[in-house]
Image 1 (cartoon, rainbow, N blue to C red):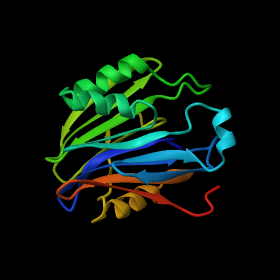
Image 2: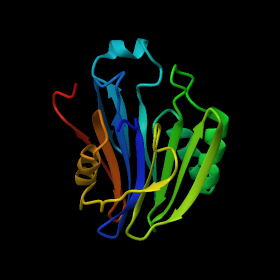
Image 3: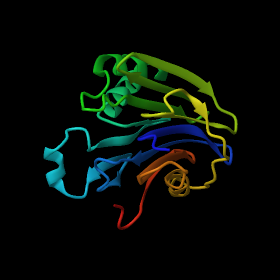
Length: 203
C-alpha cells in the first residue's frame, strides 16, 4: 500500500518519540539531513526544486521539551507558536487552518505531529474537505497519520523498536508501506535527540 508521507508519535522503551517517513513516487531522489535541532528533507539534485516547491522542507524541529514533525513548510510555524506558549493542539490547528492543503496536482494533505517529554502527543491533518486534530496520552503504543489511504488517526499495530533516534528512523523506513525514500526521528533522552536514516542508492 502506498500511503505517501507518514508522521508517528509514540514511546519506545518508555521514552517519547516522534518520527517522519518520506515515501514518494514523484520525487524519490531525496534524503534527510540532520542539522542541530532539526532534520530537513532535501533533493539530491537541486534542479528538482524548480519542478515543485513542496519537495524540500524541515520535517522535524525540536523546541526545548517539544518536538514537531510535518510533511512540509508548516513545521516552523507550528514550532514558533509552541515557542510562544500555544498548546500543541492549538499550534497545529491554527497553522493547518491557515496554510491549508498543498496546491499540487494531488491536493496533498498537510500532516503534523507534536510530542512532549512526558509523552503527551498531538496529530493533525488538513485535506481539501476538512481538518482534524487530536490529542493523545501515550503509554507504550504509537499512533500515526499519513497523506494517503491512512488519513484517520490509527494505532501502529507493531511495537516500535529502537533505543536511539537512528534506530527508530530505520524502523520507520522499514515499515511495510510502498516507495520508502528516507526517514527521521526525535527521541527523548534528557532532551530530544534527532537523527535521519537514508539508504544509499534510493531510487
